[in-house]
Image (tube, rainbow, N blue to C red; front, side, top):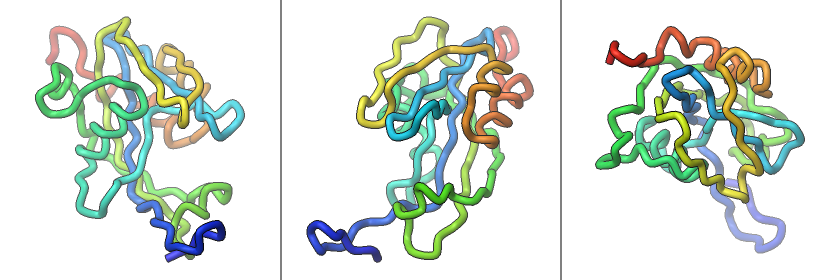
Length: 167
């Protein structure tokens, strides 16, 4: 476990298992949020498990609420709208963020979800993590994404989206 140079105390490491949640409207407009710690880094909701036994679904629900204020937790009106796409990406962690993980951890497993929300839903960003948001048609959202796996997820949206009248 790494140690903090400031307090000389152990620092908890990020778990290399995360979620990517494509939030979209019935018109297939995708919500992108801009990271606070990187220039021009637009993405969908992402986040790592808080504990090894936290389910990917619980991670997705928690991260969506923390990063956007959109509530799809159990009991919320959007709870049934979270869709597990049953897809995973394994990718190399960007060098700039490897210090957040245990020494030697180079790969992350990312589990994909979709969340359909009503057009015009309010978004409340966590200013510590994100500075802006935008809704874009899914193909334009893919073009704006920094991460190739996020761009690919946006392009897959028509295949996984729950469209009106088909739910």
